[in-house]
Length: 172
Image (cartoon, rainbow, N blue to C red; front, side, top):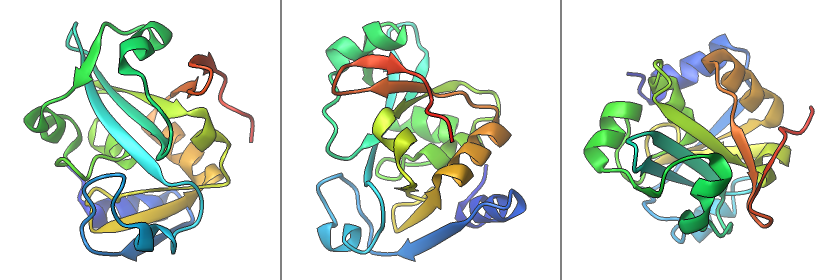
């Protein structure tokens, strides 16, 4: 499993532009307004979910996005969704609660976890996620995010959450 240093080394190997801001630990979306003010681009929330069939999902969305778990399963083709247990998250993605991040997919080479990406993030010039720990935030541009997803062999399900509908990954 990669740690923060291993993740940032991977970014360098892939030629990804990235900037990391160290800060006090942030555990919930509503925390750290003063930290977020120093970070460009939309801020994110990341939900580790398990469906009734046992399939695992990572929903990465803009922090102010309303996510209706009671209806989302019908859009993404999953069974009913609920939050995944902390031990399952750590075993699957190598992160603990409060540190779940799209970047943790680098720790899932078997692709057990499916990615659901908010259209707002797929359209953003820059996005920021924790680098596998919640004491820092790493910002990458859209081209770098796409390079990472391609390297990891990930094709996200892109959801337009305000319309609660699947969307195509916008061209770049």
